[in-house]
Amino acid sequence: MAEGSGPLAGIRVVACSTAQAGTVPYMLMADLGAEVIKIEAPKTGDPARRAGERFGEDGEISSFFETNNRGVKSLTINLKQPEGRAILHALIKTADIFGQNFRPGAAERNGFGYEELKKINPSLVYASVSGYGPSGPHADLPGTDAVGQALSGVAEAYSIPGQAMRTGVVSVADESCAILTFGGVLAALHHAKATGIGQKVETSLVGSAVRLMGWTLTTTMWRNRNPITGARINGTRERPGIAASFDDCDGKPMVFQLDHKDWVPAMEALGFMEVLRERGADDLGLALVSDEKKNLILATLGELVRTGTREHWVEHLRKADCVAAPINTLLEAADDPDVVANGYVDSVSYPEIDKNLKVHGTPWRFSETPARIGRAPKLGEHNAEILGELGHDAAAIADLLARNVI
Image 1: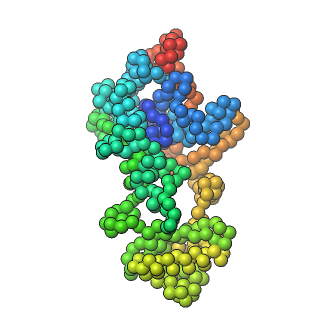
Image 2 (image 1 turned 180 degrees about the vertical axis):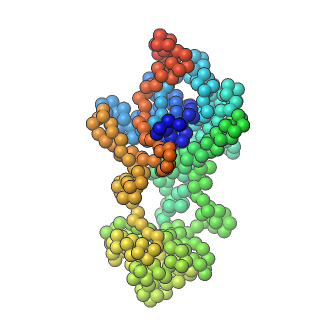
Image 3 (image 1 turned 90 degrees about the vertical axis):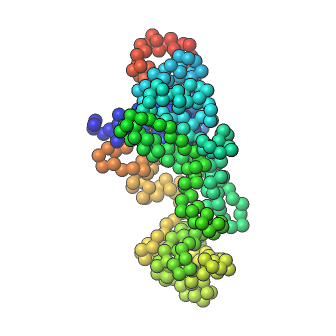
């Protein structure tokens, strides 16, 4: 393995995909050393190039596109032309993975459905991302992150009692779908390398966001009633736990999560226990059997936290070996000392605008094959390189360009 190459070095991915859930799986693979070839329409490219915050004379540097497509190669192909589809099929012969997130049925109409591509490359791992999933009454409908959040329960998970449920500003359905697609594709790739047999891997925004609900959804189904929102009080009457957030004296929020054994030590460390006892709010387990007690306990905690700063409360809880943290805004998260120290946020130089811009770092740390952060490609930047590899000389490439095939 070449020095500095990632753990996926030698893997080739071809992706006819856009947006977020359809591109992030392959961006992550590019971070880890895979060669990712992104297929884009000639002249216009991925519409995502024009989304988000933009820099440069023509707005060619997009926060949305950079985040989701860094480290990949751009090849422009007009898939409506037979010659364009022939180029894609030639690439598929050399690929390990193919990905698409078109509306159900569109891939088949455009010459890159699973049944067609597996005839060209039987060991191909084919990833298909949809909104609702491959089955069900709405399988043929387009879907977005908002649909995934709306149908999966995400909105309730972060709801506040007495207020209407809302979907969030962060694309949790898209990102969870991308991560699950990443894992599923690599599992299928392992099987393909061992057996020579590829397969289709299907994920969806709704299915991924449902998985994101974890054990809370399981508990809700078993109890057959919706969970307590605004705080997470769980366990049993005898062994209760709590995860809750409160605002401090400056209106800045914090969170703590306590197991049953932590409740009393934590309240004593904060100096809250005396008041809790006076009000009959010191027995956390009562919150599980009485809404009145639950409301009393939460109201008392909220009142007490508002008497000081979150830095003070977090420090005392951590000294007592209890879990606590400030609740960051997105800007605060970008500067959080643990986030920065671990490289979860990094910066990349953009010489064309004479700026270093903050970007996502990598969530992994490999001891032998570190991830590398790249730049998103210019539209068609790798046309000559990739087509040359497929046997097209300079004159042939110029001819394809003139006829709008690439």
